[in-house]
Length: 223
Ligand code: NI
Ligand code: MN
Figure 1 (cartoon, rainbow, N blue to C red):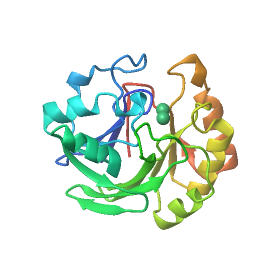
Figure 2 (cartoon, rainbow, N blue to C red):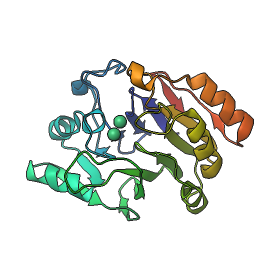
Figure 3 (cartoon, rainbow, N blue to C red):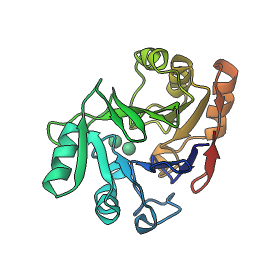
């Protein structure tokens, strides 16, 4: 059974018995929500949605220490490779098979944090189930297509507003994606992105067919 652990802000660890471990957007230093320092986190694959400090975080150090592979946009992958790291570049719409399953790179409406780059999200097929990590993004109606093409067990959505969708847009995103379960992130790290996850949960469960699970930093959800 896959286990998803929330490490605060936009960082998730995905693991399953006998499978490779995946880490998303590891911002674990100077992150008031991080339950663990970066040297206590190991992963076989590190997925990076874009290069802002609160997403690329300590990805390079974790990849270097654990000989992990960074899966990210082509521009960040090139930067990582120039620094001697093992990386795999994808671009929007592209999909690739890895030993654990496939990863498809999806669009995100945001800025990239690296010259010439684009931000992205990912649909990841892991242990036979699809999980969508939206990255940092505003709402876009093609989320309908993401949900139609890849029936989703879980959709991870930012709700903190200011830099990404806020609660009401993320509820519309949930209605487009039609995942079985929706999980919020990118909120309450700083006052600028304060949001009430219970308000999000109440609205998702009132207005969509999805259920919503709130994972506190350091806690896990198995599905
Ligand atoms: Ni960002
Ligand atoms: Mn961010």
